[in-house]
Structure formats: C-alpha cells, structure tokens
Length: 239
Ligand SMILES: C[S@@+](CC[C@H](N)C(=O)[O-])C[C@H]1O[C@@H](n2cnc3c(N)ncnc32)[C@H](O)[C@@H]1O
Image 1 (tube, protein in one colour):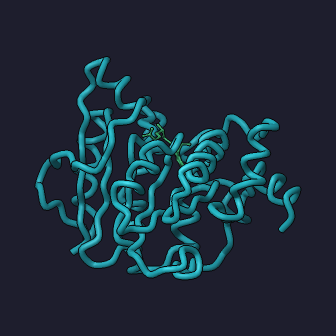
Image 2 (image 1 turned 45 degrees about the horizontal axis):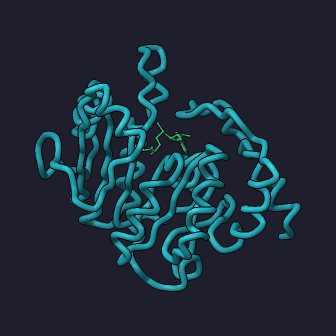
Image 3 (image 1 turned 30 degrees about the vertical axis):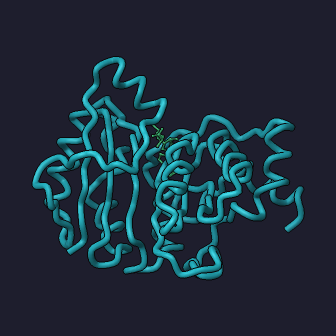
C-alpha cells in the first residue's frame, strides 16, 4: 500500500456490513490529519500500524517472535502503552484505539523510542477482537479508564458488559487476565458484579485488586486524583 492509500484509509473508519446498528462505546470527533500528523504516519505506519482485516492475526508475523501478547483497548494518547511496553519487554502489545489524534501520537512515540514490541490499529476494539484475535491466544487485556458514560441512558454504551467480557474471556489463554482501571466508582462496582456472570472468569481478589507496580500514573488519572476520585483496579483471570 502506498503512502496516499495509507493516509486515506486511516482517516476513515469503515463501517462493516451489517454492523451499522451496533451500539458504540465511543464517539468519533475527528477524522482529519494535520500535515505534521501525515508526516508521522508516512514515517512510522509501516512499522507499527496495521489495518482491519477479517482474518486472525498471525502474531509471529506481526512481531517476528513468539512472546505472549497483551491487548490494550482504548489507549487514548498511548502514554501508558509506551511506558508499560518499556517496563515489561517480555510481552508483545497490540493497542486498539479509534481516536485518530491519539493513534498518531502513539505512532510517533513508538517511532521516537524505537520500540519493537508494540503494534497498533485504529478501529473498533469489539470488531478487532471478534474477527482478528484467535480464541485462547492472548495473555492479557488492559482496559484503562474506559469512557464511563455516566448518564443512565448511556450505560448501554459502556464497554465492560458481560457479553464483551465473555468475548475477552474466549480470547484469553487459561490463566490469562483482564486488568481494568477506572476512576468511576459506580462503573467499577457494576463491572465487578457483571464479571460474576461471566462463565470462565474468576476474581482472585474477590473485590478490588491492589495496584501493580508496572502501571504508570497517567495525566488523565492525575487529574482525577486531584479531584479526589477513587481509582479502582479490577483484575480478573480465566480459569
Ligand atoms: C477515557 S479514554 C481513556 C484513554 C486511556 N486509556 C487513558 O487511560 O488515558 C477512553 C478511550 O477509549 C477509546 N475507546 C472507547 N471505545 C472504544 C472501542 N470500542 N474501540 C477502540 N477504542 C475505544 C476512546 O476513543 C478513548 O480514547
């Protein structure tokens, strides 16, 4: 694919046939790349980016090795993604995000740092996981500060539904984990409860989990802490 084709494809999020009415956990705000962003894409997309395809990813082909794979859903600006990839280099990471500015920002960060163990895709995570990720193939999922959709009428947009958690469970290897962090207490409580409905998942901590040492505090989280929001950590495992 040439540079123009990559730029054009990246600026569109294709709606897959028959999926138009799927409830989305995100709202797209911007699909336009600035000249600076275009330059970043032309420089780094080939190495770090990939597009949606209706076929399962061959991890060895994507990363060039057989390290276990962690998937991060909704990486935002990608600060945690980069930091965790540096702190835990024994894993490969696939980052999924629809937010174009954040996608390009992480592309630049990965290229500037010369990281080898991260690949990223701009698409709806639900579709990527359903269509591109094989069953029993993922060591862990990271879901940091998913949109809380605070209004009751929007709760159905929340990502961490029992159906979605069940999809994640099906993609995990036995012993694999789902690690969610949120500053929205009610969403956290709801997720803990809903996780109990998901066959195959268990909560080794019974309630909230202690923080792990390798997750950095993001700017977004810092803002929450300044407003004295509680940070809740949820750690679930496939048994
Ligand atoms: C509140 S932000 C948090 C970003 C980041 N994880 C952090 O901790 O700063 C949630 C992000 O999830 C992304 N998102 C929500 N639903 C998504 C989906 N279905 N597929 C991909 N990204 C999604 C949004 O675009 C947004 O950038």
